[in-house]
Image 1 (cartoon, rainbow, N blue to C red):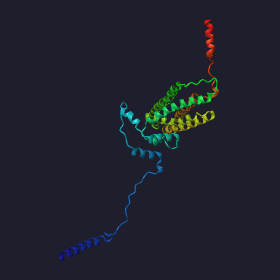
Image 2: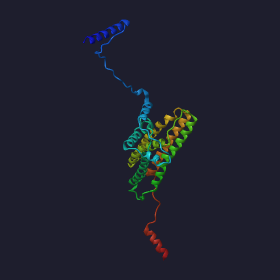
Image 3: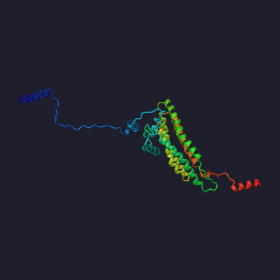
Image 4: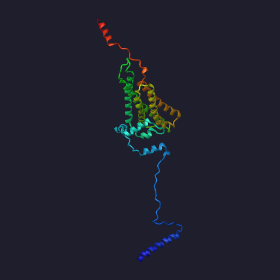
Length: 301
């Protein structure tokens, strides 16, 4: 017991010597509790802009290992998309928002061909079937009208729409690649991203062509022009991002070409599939069957 007391007094003496050596030092009781320490995590705010948000999204998104162009896996990945993604991209093509880039905010380096393929196929069916039905509704009561299903229009619609959805993106992608090599300020999307933008942009034409069954010429023009403006706005917002720092004349010429081809598609579909009733001049006159029989019998006699 005495040895323990001596050891305790010896510790107090050592502490007193330390305090004497550093008189300005502060001491703190072991029972004294400090304020709780909190760790805070700073997240990027809205001031970083859409590019910062997109970069964070791309970093958090799962990265796919790229496959070879000649492998089956490469094309399988282009159809590896769920229903929610397709619906989100269709919704974005219907309601384009300024400042929201379709590729960065909705594709996110994961383009698909499932949506563009079926959008084009649906548009081919609607534009031909509804166009044929609209013609029948307008002319079925006329004596000089002879109904014909006109199946050849399906072929015409398929060639025009799929050519527009593939050949125009191919030419645009090649031009941007060329400009990217000429100027470092120009960017470009991949070919599949370009095709995906064009394919989804055509979705606005599907309900507009269905509404064109209404036999009113002014209403048809309004609904098709509205679909053309929505669809064209998606394309302009998507590609303006890459050409805005290029030569002013080149950028304006490129966007004008995109809009012009889009206008030609809309006007061409309107004039070919939903033409005015006033332009119908009737079928060429045919010889009645009884008259033909009389001529045959007279000739034999």
